[in-house]
Image (tube, rainbow over all chains, first blue to last red; front, side, top):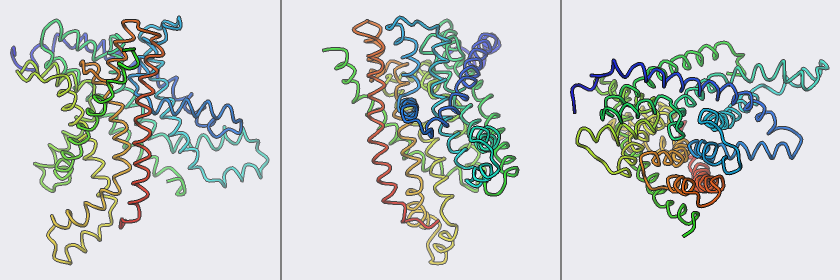
Length: 224
Length: 213
């Protein structure tokens, strides 16, 4: 080994920060697409229309049972065999969006289910239509219950962006690996990359716990 | 041997990797959890740091640190051993938290009852609390085991010859539709996780009643 583990970190910082930006964009894109799809899936698995319900259940079950890494590989290396070639960023977004949608649909479903039946009955008694009841009464309360778990999922999706290394996306882990290949100082550069993940994940975890406590105070007793 | 047989032949490696990492985690998680609950700051703080670090850094980054990073210090592990070590310590960190949650779910009166009967604190833990906490923790352990099984696919990135590694190689050399080959690999993981979930559900219902909450 040459020198202390932190020697050279000054030179590594800028390329690693570029990688981190890509990681964050990938996480942001996957969440921006995956969360709305997850909410739709959560509503659709309870839909009265049987074919729609079945399709959604299958999508969710595949997303849960298949490793995220395999989904990324399917999008990047698999789809070209049906003449659909995606860039590594689009393929990474597609794979992580599927994962986000799957896991968030379970969280949304639990949140919506936690809204008491009386709310639905009350709005029916007041003559509010089903879609308005969901849009203005059930979903806002359900999402509020779901918020801490959704933030936790967002952290996991950010950690999952490291998988995009395997589909040649220049995110944080790839940036670190490339530097390691040039300098033969993998331990040093990977440690710095690891600390960058820590610098985001641990403060984010603390924020999630605060939101959880605040939400707990905010909700009506029956929703706590 | 067709591409699909070659992928199937990676199953024993995938299963061995999951089982070894889970075994390391299940055993090492106990002292880690006890240290995390200790009243001694010198035990509690490092245990907490270890648990948080292993959970904050993505597993694939740990595998790289262990496989590529440690090699520079003269500790060159084989890809399989590096994957077992990496997934094993990550499992220990997660299972320590699962055990801790199980223990906190048990009524405090059980500690007091053990004390009143003249059992030492360690014996109360060993004979009264731990068996009940294990039953509470079991469903979360099963959920973790399934997640771990899926995470063994990460070992492909450091060259472990398991299911995804083989599927990826077959897809790259063009021995068939890469979509079908990778979907087959994905299906194998799904097939492995279903029996794990079934066993867990059955164990959970069988053990659920024997706990004082």
